Length: 120
Image (cartoon, rainbow, N blue to C red; front, side, top):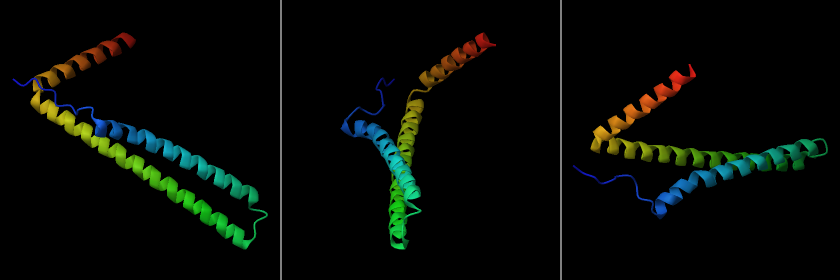
């Protein structure tokens, strides 16, 4: 019987993968706030802008929207990648340790049933 744990080791690449969504999420938040600030500025200046200034403001706003979309896509990609890695590790663990996985599932179901029964 194998007793090795096949969970990913906490190396530098794993730590950076864990930080990526957080860093990207802060980028999304920053881009969103910048976008809102640009929209507010555009609304305040809209009455006094000439044709050329209005085109520049629209281009600046479109650039901010593109940046926010790109950052949101990066966050989405990193979350999907992390979920796939987690599913792969869980699948391998269940196949290598089926009785432990079954016992854990039964214990969780029992505790969940106990908690639900107490609330009812």
